[in-house]
Length: 74
Image 1 (cartoon, rainbow, N blue to C red):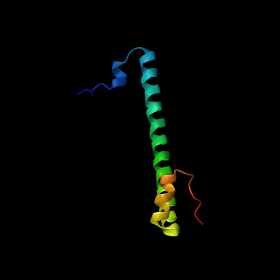
Image 2 (tube, rainbow, N blue to C red):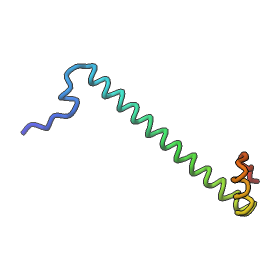
Image 3 (cartoon, one colour):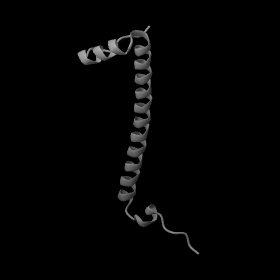
Image 4 (spheres, rainbow, N blue to C red):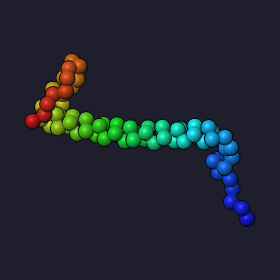
């Protein structure tokens, strides 16, 4: 019994393989960027949780409505 051919086996021109490899590298870069974004989102959430704990929900909501920069939390 022979193994099923992979997508690489069906591609004969080297250019096709290189294009597929480039797409794979791009997908990996996107996954790394997504992980970094998830990390940054968690950091922002923690910051706002601390901000609410220090200043109170009303003050934070008023600050958000003004659209000013993030308040540094002690």
